[in-house]
Length: 286
Ligand SMILES: *[C@@H]1O[C@H](CO)[C@@H](O)[C@H](O)[C@H]1NC(C)=O
Ligand SMILES: *[C@@H]1O[C@H](CO)[C@@H](O)[C@H](O)[C@H]1NC(C)=O
Image (cartoon, rainbow, N blue to C red; front, side, top):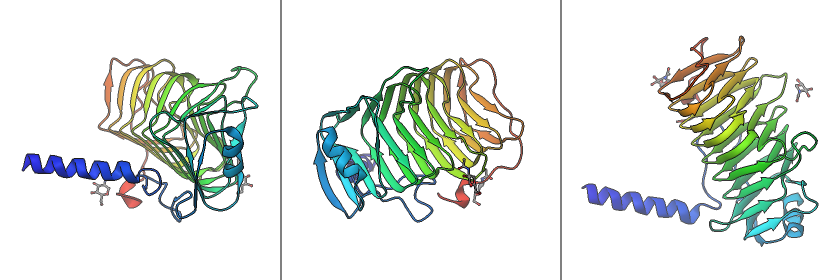
């Protein structure tokens, strides 16, 4: 029976790999609010240079944009605008966006997967992010590797909502993952199965989110702080493994927090206590 179940598991896993580009749906808040399908059902194109990437990313209509190899962005630092209804997915295991990133502004329904994204720049003077989203909804950032950003690796700001950030690697960086940045307490987000490795601050910094569900993340060698519920954020933090992390879990005075099943190994500093009544994720998704 054990053998059989392994075979079944492998078969399911290959099915996921085969369909991985276009058909998968995230766990978390991303599938709500009408669903996040990216370019599913639209035109499928493969790009290997920045002109083609920019052309299809900014086009209206549904596109599945497959990225083959390394696309070097010129001018360096550009956050390529992404219009609604796009899936941008790496082909194989070595697809990369180098010297640039994506800007998702006032749009809905964008998926980015399987890309290594580096957008270096001067930390004091550039605003070079790997992915920056403002006032957008239904975003899924999955299986990407972020490193070498000028500013934030990923910034999801100004009422951007209904998104899932899953299975990404964030590595060797100062300002890692900033979410919220709004006075309105409206955003709903899930951050799960990410690896924050040798990063400093914002892992993530969650500022004024209505609901943020952080689970099964792995933080190693984090030097300033780990998960941080800022402002009036309501956070549920479950089964997160904090290793060698300074201030693994912080909650501001007006924040609400429910934390359970987390592991703190060789950590120092703040581990915030539960407070307030926090949403139950199973009200929204399984
Ligand atoms: C907050 O919501 C109001 C409308 O209720 C809107 O005008 C404002 O732009 C929002 N703030 C941000 C930072 O998006
Ligand atoms: C959330 O709701 C489910 C279903 O009603 C329940 O089984 C579970 O215990 C609840 N979890 C918490 C943390 O309250």
